[in-house]
Each structure stands twice: as C-alpha cells, then as structure tokens.
Amino acid sequence: MLRLLIDASAVVKAACFAACNGGNKTVVTFNDKQVAIPDPEESFEIFLSSYRAALRDLKMTPAQSVIVLDTPGSKQPRRSIYDGYCRRPQQAKEWFDSYNKTLEKVCDVLMKHGAIQVSVKQPICEADDIIAALASKVECVIWSSDSDMLAHADVYYKGSINAGM
Image (cartoon, rainbow, N blue to C red; front, side, top):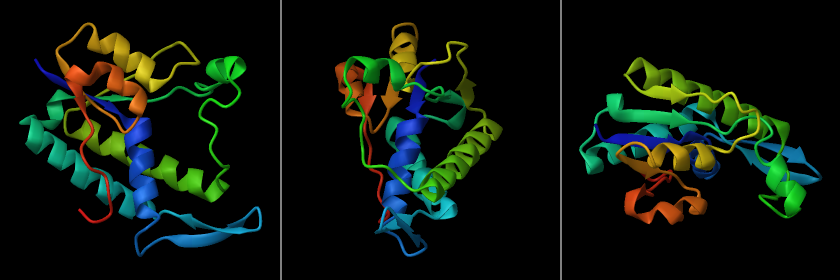
C-alpha cells in the first residue's frame, strides 16, 4: 500500500508560520521585539486545508498517512558537528506553546481518521532521518517543508502551506 509519510514537525511548523500572517495571531514582546504568536486553531486549519489538498492531489486516504515527529533533542548531534545547523532566531515560549498545541491536535485528529504515528526509541532522531529509513522499506510519498527531503525527490511532495488556502 502506498503511504504518505508526513514530516509533521516541519509541516506543522510551516502552518504556524503561515498563521502568523493571519488575522487571529497575538503579538507579544520578546527580546525587545514584537513577535507574532500563531493561533493554534488557525494553524490547525491551515494544516488541515493543506493535508486535504495533499490527499486529493495524491489520491490517498487518511488511513495511508504515517505521522513522523522529531524526537526531543534531535538537532543536538548535528549542532555538535556544525554549530550553525538549524540555528534560527529564538522564538518566544508562547510561539512554541502554540506550535505544540497545533501538533498535538494534528496527531490526534489524523490518528482518529486512521493515520499511524511512528515512535522511535532512539532519543535523538530527526523526523527526516526516520522518514529516510521508512522510505527505503515502503512504497511512499514524503510530505515535508524541509528541503533536506529533496534528496528523495522521486517521492517528495511539497504542496502549498499558506494562510490563503
């Protein structure tokens, strides 16, 4: 069976950034700057709209979906080699709270509709590494906003994630 391997950590993050441009965001001061905090419901709706489009484009059902998440501390090994790896400006705690609420809801809703969530026991593992291992074993399409996944261009689906959907 063809599977849709979802880099949920990356795709939900992209939905949250898109929601920061929407009308329901809140603004907090962080490091003396005004920072947009995405509304978790708006982030979820952006994800859901993009997910539905992916399923439609790929002619798949939710039961063919596999949710893959980064494990805690997943960036640390690569940062120990290259300090600039995935270094982005710091975000406010509220931003991550919103992201985590959105991610939790995405996982809950997709699993209620038949998706599988992959868990790994290795404590420091990025979703793209897990996806690469899975992609070598199952017939699949990868959905990610992470450009690292372009190495799997024959099975890659970027789709569109934006607030205008």
